[in-house]
Length: 116
Image (spheres, one colour):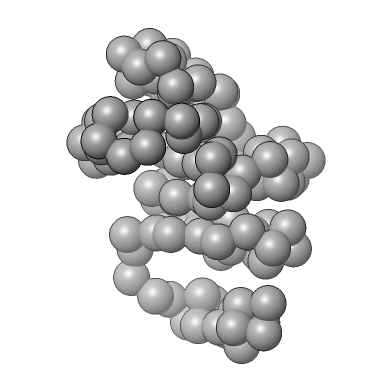
């Protein structure tokens, strides 16, 4: 695993980005996507292996392109966006981590995720 896509640049992200960028393998390429490209850039500029991208989760084409380019997706977006991200990860056969509770919509994807 070399490419990690982190979605969301809110208050919980700085510790995660610091951990991924400095404590884990420094060869990781991390893309930090947020609807506020400026907020993502503020976090990313602190590290040489983190790139910021303005990311609109409702833009299906952008979402698919970003997920396809990643080996792992970590979504720290608001819970209402996790199902769309999860479906894209299933389509692109990428692993997804979230810190969110498991909604009924996410549970409905369980069998497909296990099968892949």
